[in-house]
Amino acid sequence: MEIITHQAIDPTLCGRPVAVEEGYSRVVLRTTAVMAADDTGLVHGGFLFGLADYAAMIAVNHPNVVLGAADVKFLKPLAVDAEVTAEARVEEVQGKKQWVAVSVTQGEEVVFQGMFTCFVLDKHVMDKA
Image 1: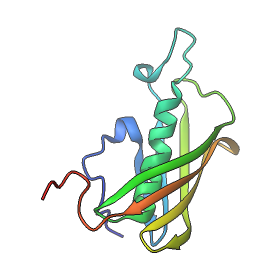
Image 2: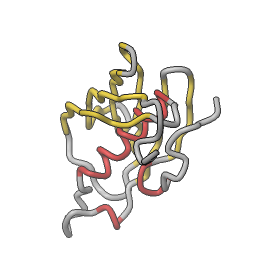
Image 3: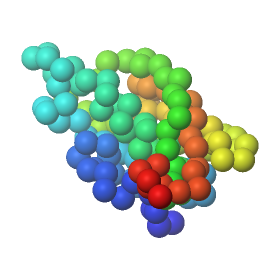
């Protein structure tokens, strides 16, 4: 399935899509030293959130999808040079609103979970016309 949203995303920061289907995506990210929050190699949670958000956006896969809200849990710390996989699945659709469940794993271990509330707008959020 062709990805028709968020096409300018940098895969080194938000991950590489490896599967995109109707209402589903899987995105893989390799963490790097530029993501470290301190000298222990702890990855800043914003990069994990970015991965999960990107997976949610391409699970919806509409050019005008935006994030409205997120309820997330960071379950385990993540270190530099880790490979993590986000799986996103549209759970419910009500008009323009879609709820997308996202789980991020490192191997078999769940390190992040979230429910993302996405909106499909009539026009791009940056369109002033």
